[in-house]
Length: 328
Image (cartoon, rainbow, N blue to C red; front, side):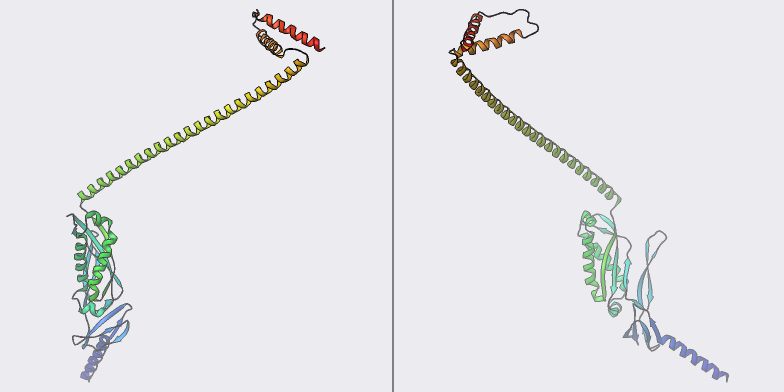
């Protein structure tokens, strides 16, 4: 009786063990490679899957994880597991020394984003996929950066990322892996090179500032000279127009005065002739009288000097009197 119970218990434990080993639950975005007697049998998808225990066994693969150390550095850890993550994964590689084309040793660390597209190839085409991706990335990074100068490496990150992605994508295609992106996190030249670059950058900025200041001063002087020239031209043009207008006005005024005097003389001559007098004597006498009035109109004039020709004036006055008397 006891032996029967022990047998039944053993059978029950064996059944439970076989059921536990025969039922495999695969999570979403994961897959599992099943080998039957050491040979590839099938790939388990997400959900509940049933396999034959002992005969069907999942293939163990090495997977890479990253942990942060005490000093903040990234420490890679490799673990064996029976599941393949089908999601996009990112590997943060530690810093490595790379020699540029101009023989400058530079520290560079990179990130790679990849995704397993074919789990069968990722298991059977490469022995250790994470380690292979890391070493391939490091060697490819050395080759790409080794073709560039330090200045080109610092200013051409997009070019380096694009070259790395294309090379890695082609190389890992046979492993069933798709490389989506490669990013360079840091490019750290030696301290002496950084100090020299900072001095060069500072000198370049000072040179640019001096050039810009000189160009601004030059442009300011040019604009000032052009403005002064335009001002002189406008001033000369204004003076020219003013002189022309003034001369035209004086000419027109003199013409009008001359015409007025001619008209007045003509009328006086006609009037004098009507009185049977000499118009010339009348005009001369009138001018003498106007001049004499101007001479005696001042306040400070105490003595009046009459020229010798005053007799002519008096005779002219007599002539005017005779003319006026004859007219009456």
